[in-house]
Image 1 (cartoon, helix red, strand yellow):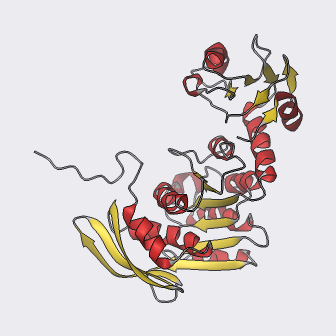
Image 2 (cartoon, rainbow, N blue to C red; image 1 turned 60 degrees about the vertical axis):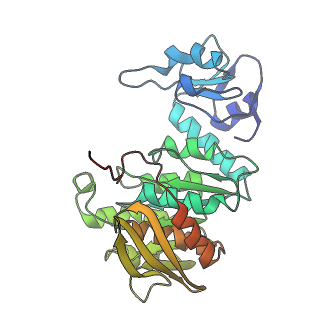
Image 3 (tube, helix red, strand yellow; image 1 turned 180 degrees about the horizontal axis):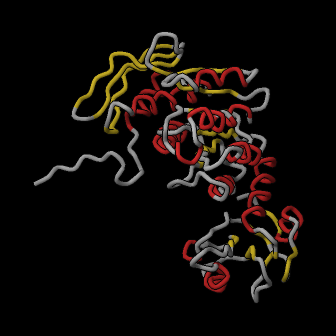
Length: 322
């Protein structure tokens, strides 16, 4: 996180500072066990656990400020809505980091794996921040952004949705430079009611792009390619057919993992994924499309994809039985 005084933070979030001023230098945490020197502890009251009961523990770990809904014995900013406050702070930090490139990723399937593949590719070109686990909601996205500093070059932000408007709200905070929609499928159909509403929700990613933003769209369903109409700027598609500038050819499965030729407008290069399943080709192509937009060569994209391992435990792992 960029360094900010507690008094500055109170003004940004519209809260009241109790205690003396201090410098906050580390990203916020929602678990007192993960608090670090110079950090903010978010005292969130849940159904079973009240974060206010762990403020002292967080300060013992090095936290210097807490966001609370009531006055604490430790230095705190009292605010009516802690989650909204962290969103306001994240938006401020995002606006302060003008050199930061934010890539937003959404879709019914493949978000986490695409995030991991892309993060691996980007890491060779500069400091890259990405969430660990499924930090893809109104709390996780701000927490990820608040890990960024002046030295961060890329932030890969996974965006999920439970309701229409959720992704639009997350885009207001993250302000993505590149927006990726992987595909529209029946995941969460019960919550949205129809594929059309799911598509409308995912398209909020593209609507959230500014004029110079780039839309990256999969062509694995009938809904996602049509989202190009929602963006006046550059649109690039990926898939496995010839009309896509980023595509895979010569796809085959070897020992459970996909091998293919990555084709971009700049050339062709072989990829040997370490991830299990042919469906990983689409995720790899999405990552390749973003890297291509950022100016990476086809060879270096292919090499990075071939070296990437999944960090998501138990996702599509092969285990040899005795």
